[in-house]
Length: 255
Image (tube, rainbow, N blue to C red):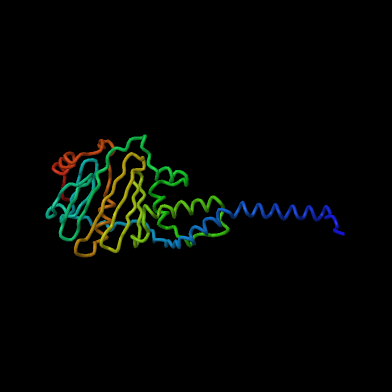
């Protein structure tokens, strides 16, 4: 004859079921994430991130103003380079280095981009979010992560499509009072500096490439460090004619 369970046995069974349910709730996101990563054979390495330290070797350089931008440029990009315009950019092509400068325009307040929205969720600025995404790796996953930590981990790795880790050998950051930037270095022949004003009104980029030799990264860092933006001079999105006028009226004074 089958014995009826005692109250103690019933209570014990209910505790076990509650524990299983709680574990299922707690680890189900971890299990799902681990399954997605394993199923798609995803391996994302971290990229070294450090502070951008400019050598300050700008003696004899030109102080330049191009539209709303001010920056220092070496003589080879002012005296001997070919200059031209492309879509939203002004380009200088020297023998050893080519520089492309995206000229920023005033971003309407209503057009807040998705990157800024994601950054606000993690309580970061967009530039700091990009830096953290380069630091992130699939090896960071832990079963002991809180749901909040797991969500942060997932967000950072999801940005790899926008900021590919495989194309960067190192990343350097610059955080100033009015401008934040991130320099992504790719195999010493190309480097891209993306920046945003801390007000969120302006954003831009500049790209340096070495057509024949390795880049002088010290020179690249000095150019990036010298960059500033006068937000009072920002206008609506520029036409090719506007960019040509900026290039023709560029101020360049050698120091």
